[in-house]
Image (cartoon, rainbow, N blue to C red; front, side, top):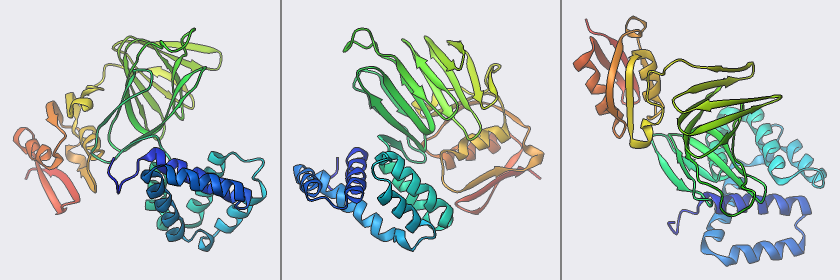
Length: 322
């Protein structure tokens, strides 16, 4: 860890200390405990300074609704858990000044997540039980392991989990993944979970996964992809893209619509990327490297009747070749 770049766990702890102190009215005992935590590691002090700087830069009391949120936190300290309090405060800030605060709240969300990847980044994490977690572009997840369960909360984006057997406890703790739409239980194997705005998709590479819904236990086998939303779940036909290829830095397509391909590539780059309606239904198959999406796009006119129009480096559109 860079001396100038505290990790997400340390920053998350600093935020918790900030909220605990606010809830207690800066209790002398808690202040002493917080100072002890800050002095234990240089990373802790750097995390504390970063959180304090963000708090001051945002000027929370100047944002419409933030004063009410802070008063609520102060008056409800015995009833609100720290995570709930932070969620409440963030929600009010979004309502009060969404445009102004969007970037800072995204950074705050990243700091309060155990595992984070940025746009265009793929990261690999070894978990305490021996499982391996991969995060795709612009994704975040939390870890909650205790004596009863092993739980991963996918907050946004996409992950691949390689499951390990639980040897620390008997009986073995279930390995669970929670999203907005689903509660999943993984067994010996590998599976991909992708959380979109309106649904969660689960693609099982090896082994099997159980989908837990009220009154129903649905099994997903290797080679299957399931879609889950507020209305229920459905088994999807064979996919036109390899669900796990991103872990190797690739997009592998099979007769994929150009519009869908462009939407997928846009996840890995900053700015605006689209294609014109007249070329949206063109099809392509192949293996494409994600390390440089500009080079990737330059390959398309070699196989399809399209041209690439750049208004700026960050505004790109695929159009029909005249």
